[in-house]
Amino acid sequence: VQLQASGGGSVQAGGFLRLSCVASGRIFSIKKMGWYRQAPGKQRGLVAQVTSGGTTNYADSVKDRFTISRDNAKNTVYLQMNSLKPEDTAVYYCNAGVRSIGSTGLPSDTYDYWGQGTLVTVSS
Image (cartoon, rainbow, N blue to C red; front, side, top):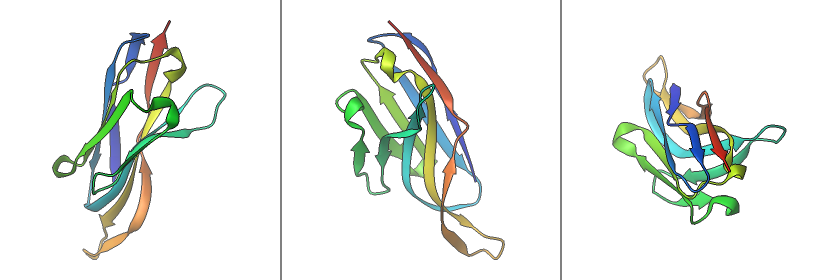
């Protein structure tokens, strides 16, 4: 299973970006999908998460500015980021809880997988 993130870049404060993350491989099912971020000198923390049923959870710092969504048919999660602030500058990582299809053809337990990270830079 692999997660491929895209959509990062550099924007001015007040601007917007949309991140995408596609999960690929021998996937049986995906439970939660989400985005985390890590700013220089800080620990990685949750930005937003969405369950397979569509329930969302956001960090307080991004509520009302960011929107997470997913397309289950495409195994893809999105993060629409509006009204970006300099403090949103970080490397953003996608994350998914995945049951893969094992060599026997049976589904595995659920494991966490991470994308490679995409840099978001917001200038003032």
